[in-house]
Image (cartoon, rainbow, N blue to C red; front, side):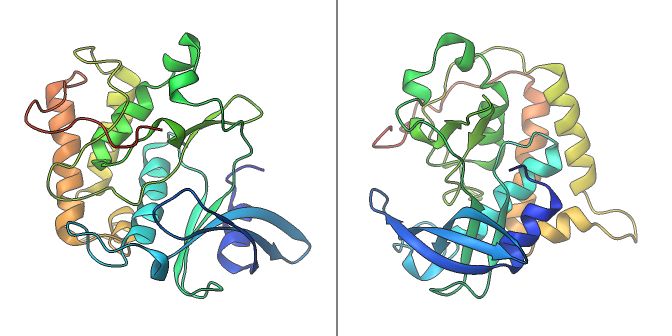
Length: 244
């Protein structure tokens, strides 16, 4: 199933029933069935009340960040993140609901062949942009049609540098022109128009603070000015733990 408006409608308005729990994560995560009219789909439900408190991220904010990551992915035109909505009325309260991607869990970044690793430039740039503090190898999925998807974006968008990722394959390499072009358009769309209405920015502000949206814009401008994939900060741990 694609990320069309129909999918978003099912996720946002469908009735939800829990089918199981994912047990390997730090926060409560459930497999759910979303049903709207005569259509159903499998989704991943992350209730805010099941989030483990963190010292550096606001309480009960991770589900909102999951939703913001989807909006950024769509705003860039990269379609990297499965369709995601924020539900106020989930079975266990408010939380994010994301389309479940069928995939082989044994095939991930650390087992990718070279051809699939070479497809990760948009992923690397996306993580730099959203300041992803937790890009593990298993957070990059390949679906049955061969498309790559990115999941688990609760630890993103902090105003301080929090980047931790296992994907450092492209250090010093020029950012491809097509990615720079879409990033340039995105920055232009994010900036407040004179006396106008900015639906893209207002959409993000439903889930992020003004300071976080400003930081997102600054990171985009900094990446465009740099023009290459940067190396990790030598004074910080560059990758998350565990890495898978």
